[in-house]
Length: 214
Ligand code: SF4
Image 1 (tube, protein in one colour):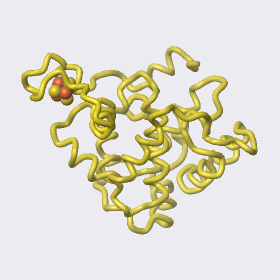
Image 2 (cartoon, rainbow, N blue to C red):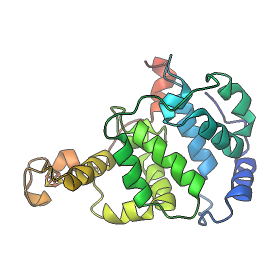
Image 3 (cartoon, rainbow, N blue to C red):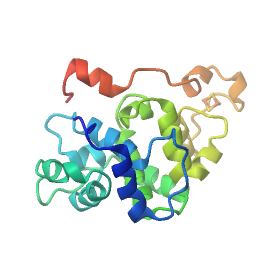
């Protein structure tokens, strides 16, 4: 779905008017409204799956998000979602991913942090790099959002592991599950699987070629 006709300045003004204490960003950085636009857009690509389930948000939360960040699309998008839609069946690890993310929240924007935590936990179940499954244009945009809303997470991943690997390794560590083949990353045969630039094409671009995915 194309949200391009929404002027970035309008979107940002709407966001800051309600957010108040969102940390300052440079002019080059995408706003939260820009990033939510990309993520909502990629979530609409799941044919037959309600937007609520693709995002991990119930209808009320989705409505609040759209009101704040994508008001021009609120009515059309909500019309695709049943009135009583919940966030869909959760994967076993989803509550733990959400809780871990919220433990790392910056505490400056409760709504955005809650929405992003739920969306990240749900989108991380998809098979691609996390930045791709979030609908972002590159890995850097994921870093911008995480620094903005989950600064402690970025601090903890100071070695810059791949994000899904990092999240799931942290949860395994808490459960006492050892998934590492070596006590030292530099000597580990899985180094390339855990680190590296997470290269790839944005899924929006791929979706434009291949159409909706199941
Ligand atoms: S590189 Fe090896 S030791 Fe380091 S996090 Fe990955 S699996 Fe664990």
